Length: 308
Image (cartoon, rainbow, N blue to C red; front, side, top):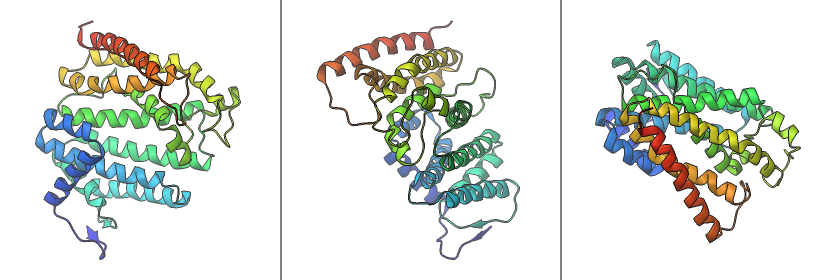
């Protein structure tokens, strides 16, 4: 390993501590859960993993950076990953790359192949996102499904692996958190669209005659979401059945988050499927959304924890 002369070489201890602080600041709910449910050693390296992938993702999402630079950057990270794995000589050009180095060293030493696989899959998903920018930010239904599955499944596999390193999460059925992912795409619609990512398939854009030049303000996307709503709820039903088959620790980690994410979705419905714009809160609608969410959530919990 060689290091760019402009970079101060941090110690592994410094990196692990700073990564822990980073996760606590950016994802404090996840940080709190992992403090309770993940061993100290695994949690430390999970922090490295989160910070490194967040850094790459932020680079790809930066609207000020040209597409070609984004592609070259992600490809360079994939190449760096392969060189670390193969014990080849490589150069550290950014201090954040030390996170990747120590994470992969940990994975190799402890035979944690799933960490290596899913970091590579996540980088590939980000490379696919760069390709999407060149195509106007739009994917076909098939392409969009592929990238959502790749990204959400990689994230869930890594989190579950840090929770239970010895458990085989490769066997079917695989928990991929697709319900979470689809709701977050709706919640973050404006942010993603501003960065050049349109999370509506080309087929649906044509079917609902959506205006891609001003999709954020296009009211017709409400009709699209009403059409997609049953499908998104069907993902919740699927994940309930999959979680029912998984160890208790996995259930206890994931289930609390479903209330908040389900509330996000039900609120959108109560406001007439409006999303992606500033919506003035209505007290009655908020109460109704909370009540409906509570009913659905309790039914979901029953399905997860009661043996089928």
